[in-house]
Image 1: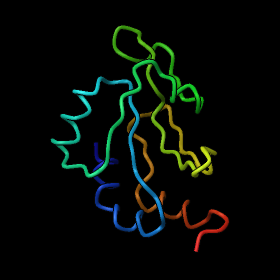
Image 2: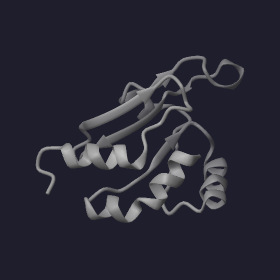
Image 3: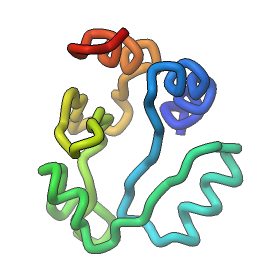
Image 4: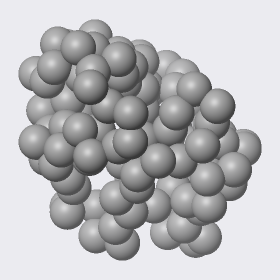
Length: 114
């Protein structure tokens, strides 16, 4: 949750770099809507219960969810307008996440970033 709140606090800096923020999880739409409201997020948390997007980016974590269901690895990913991954931080420890400063630095390091 703190990663999401950190991104919320950095939204203006991210927008200034031409970035939009969205989360993708396997949870149902209703759960995500509750999270967005409770955390005061100004960006969407999208539902991917069939893991289509998660699989497209190779982030499936087989059997790691409740009752052995598949979920996504904890990841922060920068994807360009063409759907190409330009930077990714993937961890097996959901408590280890990049800070907004890490994300902003990754954006600034991309070729063509002003």
